[in-house]
Image 1 (cartoon, one colour):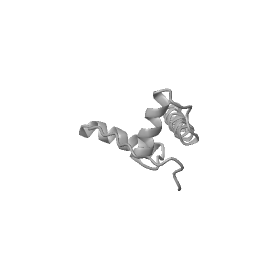
Image 2 (cartoon, rainbow, N blue to C red; image 1 turned 120 degrees about the vertical axis):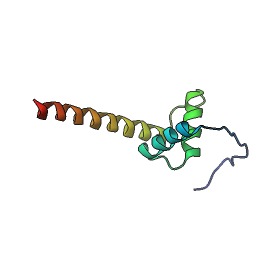
Image 3 (cartoon, rainbow, N blue to C red; image 1 turned 90 degrees about the horizontal axis):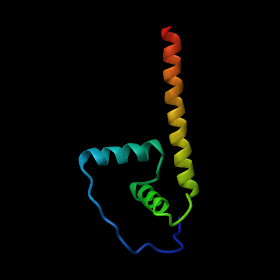
Length: 82
């Protein structure tokens, strides 16, 4: 993938083990291409710099789908347990 505007600046931050695990789980769950892409999109979106990218919308939809699946699983467990 060719970057039209090369990225030359580096932003660095540290995470503790729990934060890293949360980030890794979010990237896996949302099928992010990399930590960098996930963090860049999230930071730029929440900073109000740009609207959510298509990739961010896909991540959000995947997250919503996971939440719905979890709720359906809980409802199914309640129905079966009655």
